[in-house]
Length: 216
Image 1 (cartoon, rainbow, N blue to C red):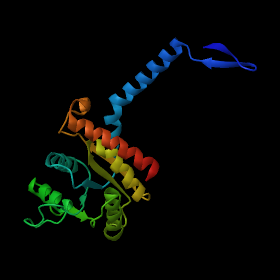
Image 2: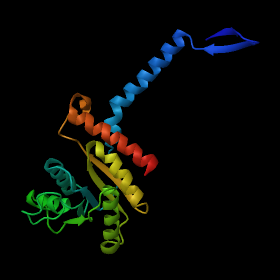
Image 3: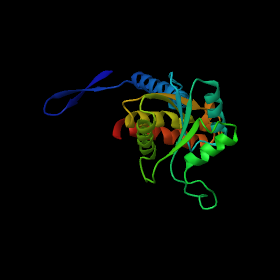
Image 4: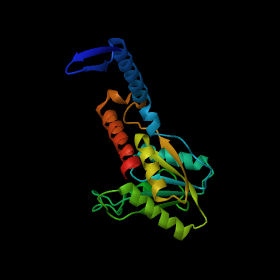
């Protein structure tokens, strides 16, 4: 830095960054941004399961993710798989299902799941805070049906996982909740910025997570 003197009624000292200080700050910012850019998908899709007897699966997951959820359930110590979800916007007129939770349960049964170990919990129609409202519905179900249970693992998909996990913990502070994130197969998670689908997904979920964290 250097000091410049300005002639007015009296001398004043002003301080400015020299070119190498500016360059160093720019390089530091670029490095931090690069690290965040490279690791944001990993941050948004955490793997932190806990020891629990219940596996909760979000009903909007695609079929591949549901198949992976069933594999996790069958290979683990879980005794009950609960599928959560909300009302269907399309398709309910020509099917017998009224919610994504019911569709996901039927899919899991078609994949070989045990009907005695898989249940669905559907929330009512809401226009905002859908995940949070779903978690409240699950909390009510557990308190009524399985009051002795106070822990479970939540299964979500890709970059949406951390936001779902945070909202479930906000809605159910008296429960221990682990998270299992299934890898997104619609884009390369290691190079998500190379496709429009990956960029939109990660960018939107990043904003959504920090909104929930600071403003929900």
